[in-house]
Length: 103
Image: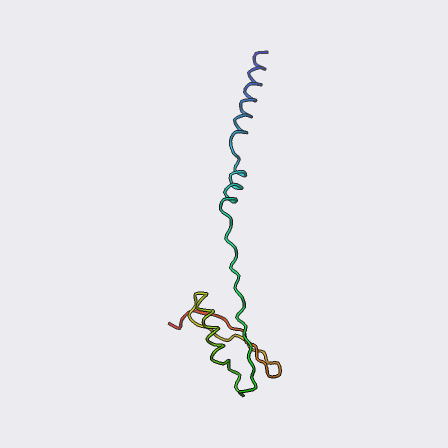
């Protein structure tokens, strides 16, 4: 009988000790709550359009190139380059990409 009483007391104290300790799952959730993951960077596409009726060349005007370069510099790159172009009647639409320097 005494052995049974000691076993019950041991089990109860073990359960009490284990419930008092935070689990790894609870600790991980607490860390995740205090240190949320950084938000994904959202970069708008570098797409510009211009009217081509004034020129026979399919080169973007200087102001479009300056806008694309400024957007790339803001993103931490040194150069902007036209990666694709689409023509619809007298409207040209170009997609630009960014890259590092030539050096």
